Image (cartoon, rainbow, N blue to C red; front, side, top):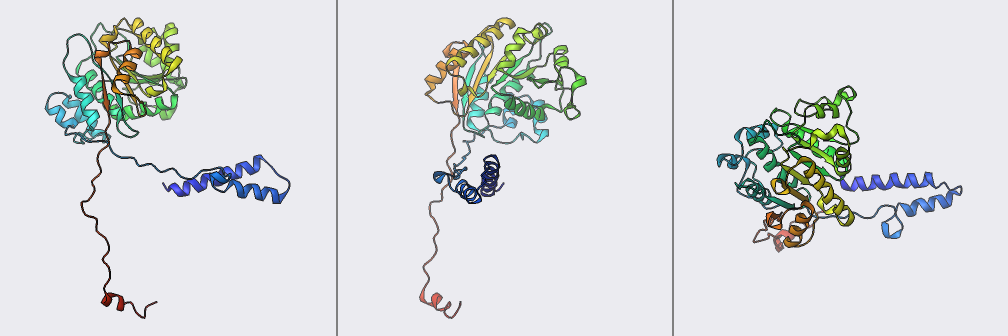
Length: 346
């Protein structure tokens, strides 16, 4: 993508729209307005100058899915399944926050489950940081015969994020039949007959609400508004049961003030309906811009998830140091002989 060309194209389209929407009969006045709108932002232009910001990688660890599988922490067959998709190579080094979060979640504990907060920049692999421990946990521990309901609930604030993330997850799991997933939004078809041809997914992904209610999936991805409806509708009672083991709250920085209080109470209702204590669920909050100290984030997560603060741990993505050469090579000052060679040339 040519960023400069994109800016110019955006500017021209906005100017054309402004000219057509604000029709001026006087050609000179219309031309003057168009010229101003095409200018720079401080002079009245519709598009400001480019803002350039470096996107630096996070610090890598010595772990990979392959090495974790060799230690017995990651299921070997799941490792091979994810590697076969090409989306997450088994030997790709994990970022430090991904590795630390996985090892923290994988520690054997009796009784209370761990919960954690992941904060890292955009593109730093926050999704994989919570998906890898969740997929490994669900893969290793199959649903018990008497366990009902979904096993993992992933909450996003908007439908667009739900659609994007369920597509990524489906690309990872589409060639297996051990774990199932479902996205529940206002756009989800009611029955399989309403499904579009482009949504003829593999069996691991439920295509409609009817299909999901008939066979409750392991992973449900939705937004908090739809979750409220699910709790109110009798036909959706099957989603909530004793199988619930993971709750993920992505884009956690959006939940402040009244909305944070509403989410706290909403999650309490989910656990009450499922009849699972907060300490028996691994809660995960993620954000690229969640500010504050570790103590602040621990207190925030403990409040929103209604769990003891001692069960919360914070993992931060740390930018890797870019290699800088110790000696910068500069051009050599030309000598008189070299300069004489250019004499007479144009």
